Length: 180
Image 1: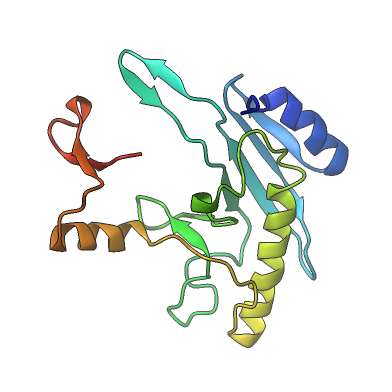
Image 2 (image 1 turned 135 degrees about the horizontal axis):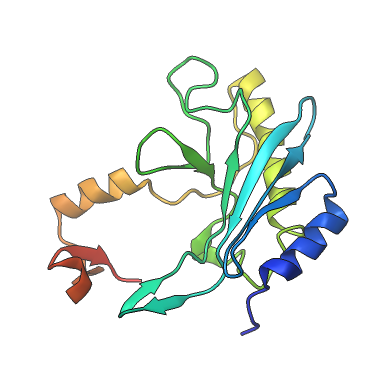
């Protein structure tokens, strides 16, 4: 396994290939960028949060080996067409209001912190926006892809039948969590 790319490594490549993107936070172990992407007609302001490493702190593991990409500009919202239908391939935030983009299937290991964001995530985001614009016009998502089951659906299924993936850990006060 290769080492995760540092925030500095990622920033050099992003600034080279996407000069309008800027590093807005560098915590050493976590980085965040903002910048515009224009797939067809309009520019979209994008944020990227990169947290490549695993940290251990007082017996707790802090980890988010997936990357978080958000569209900050309108008209992207949970009901952009006013029909009650959400855009395809998004992850709802815990608050049920915000969301991030689903750009790849994490079960297929299509992206890892060893990959450059500028070579993968940003082109995939532009492609997602391209298919979003088409969906807005035609009501058809032509981008394909597999989307993992929404968290709320998983919670409903867990209550209906216990899963072998559920385990109790000392730091969860006896509550069941997904084994990872």
